[in-house]
Length: 331
View (tube, rainbow, N blue to C red):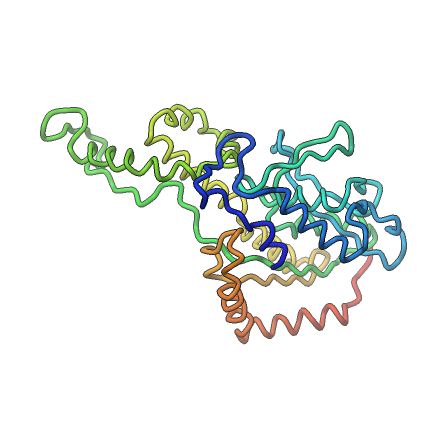
């Protein structure tokens, strides 16, 4: 919570600084870096410690990775900053933490020079907001002779459904026929009124369109159709909505959970493994990434979820499995 308080201390939007353009973001990345470095310094004494663990081959080593997205070729597989193995990264811990935290429109992307020539990175949540599948793949690479693993996945709250179209009305003529307005013009009074409302609302909504949202939209198949509309206020509203909902779609974790649950509970005993997912089902979607002041509501929603009988039973099962792991079958 201390880290969040420092990182999200000054919101430029609230001070009427619109976060648009290549170098304008809602929050100061330097404050985030200071907060991360303070945590690292307190834990291991060296804020510039390397991500690569020199003891990664010892029995008591705990392999760690974080996920980021390449900023200039986001279609590539996600970047994993590892502390272990042949591909362990030599960047600093705080750089990896900054990369996985660089949420579009919130913080400036970070350039990490190693390996050369370096690369720009943004939030890993855009591609792997739920990295449990990545964790399973990595575990299979590290422990090649183990067939089954125990996975515990902790979410940050189930998102509400993403709507790319807001409350569309059914066309009056659903049979494919066309009709003109009562006045005989191309645009009837109803359509004209809608346009007027769109123009009036566009100036209020444009501040939410940050560079991250535009970057996401530019990679879509329909981006060329959307782009021309940005020249008019109505198009700005369209792009705003697309950018917001695309972020929601790209960061949705439930599809990953469903796939993991299906694999974990496979009837094929060779594929089965213990899998636990804990995630507050409702209410959290209304709390933004920067809303650290809502800690009481976050606590209330979380404790309400943890108080459910079925969740308590699952926690007990998970705890028992962690302290008394079953004999995992090797290959």
